[in-house]
Amino acid sequence: MTDLSHLTTNFSRELTACDSLDSLEKIRIHYLGKQGLITAQMKLLGTLADTERKSFGAAVNDVKQYISETIEYQKNILETAAINARLASETIDITAPIRSIQCGTIHPISQATEEITAIFGAMGFTVAEGPDIEDDFHNFTALNTPETHPARQMHDTFYLPEGSDGRKMVLRTQTSSVQIRTMESNKPPYRIIAPGRTYRCDSDMTHTPMFHQVEGLLVDKHITMAHLKGCITDFIHRFFENDNIPVRFRPSFFPFTEPSAEVDIGCSWENGELKIGAGKSWLEVLGCGMVHPAVLTNVGVDPECYQGFAFGLGLERLAMLKYGIADLRTFFDSDSRWLQHYGFPALDIPSLIGGLTR
Ligand code: 2NL
Image (cartoon, rainbow, N blue to C red; front, top):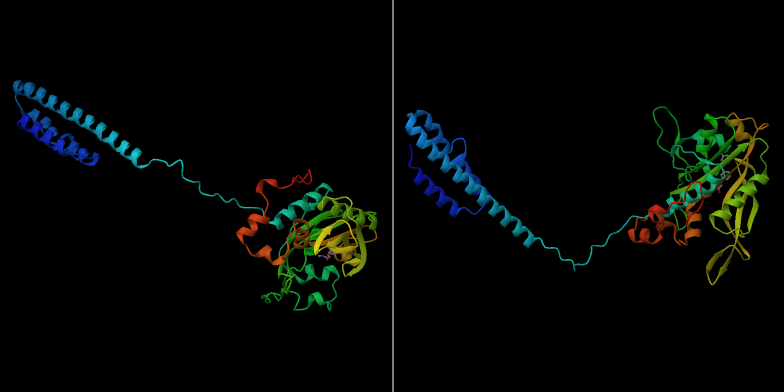
């Protein structure tokens, strides 16, 4: 049996010295814990005679209640003090300037892809995709490109090292290979566009080794060059948002189309500034033609039953013209200031059904 008043005095002294929740918890354990001083006194009760147990038990209980209530009270005081200290140290300076928030933007190439996809989407074209790494057949042979064609030469095309299967693979030089694959694995009619990356071994002011194309293909019964001209003219008017732009089809040559044409739009140069839509000059914007019968035969489509047209356009060039971008190479610099300036807000993508919404 310990002198309870001695125990209480010690407790009070310890409590006075206690100034943190941690040390308060140590005090609680010291008195009320499993091995604590009060707990030890409670355990002692069983060894006492009845009369003694009654009075001492009541006394121990009183002290125990006093200690636990005092600790609880002190805990409240310390917790409140801790909160007040935090509130005092964590004040918010509402006069401080905000941190600038920089939102990402849609790259002009992505924007142009979306706009072009929306225009052709409204005409019933769907998007087809295929691999960037192609075999010789899908990139050249199926497209009626002669073995001697300059496009096949080493200096125009990125050839990959020959694999163990001996297959000659290339980085696709146009996205036509996507349309070849679509025709191989589906029955006509076809009405697809193939946007994507293309690669040519070329690098100067107006060429980058990787660039973007959208190719289109429409094959059905009774398709004529009039359909081609109408489709391309409508596209140009919608893309440049001006129905009065003069459009000119100029005879040209591609191995995969016959006849073939290059398409120019009317423009003028005033004080060195390009104006699209009127004037005496012409600007080439895309190439097109009626799909060569040999190409249809190569993918198992009977050219006696089906005809069609195809076109290919360079996205960088069209984006430069529409958005007023002067230098091709800036597209690929990843300069965030350039992207802030020429990029588009993320929630402004034209709907695939409604056409342009900008
Ligand atoms: C250009 C010219 C063109 C095609 C691409 C094509 C695809 C198939 C069949 C026939 Cl599967 N033709 N594509 C046709 C004419 C021109 O691109 O100057 N592109 C930038």
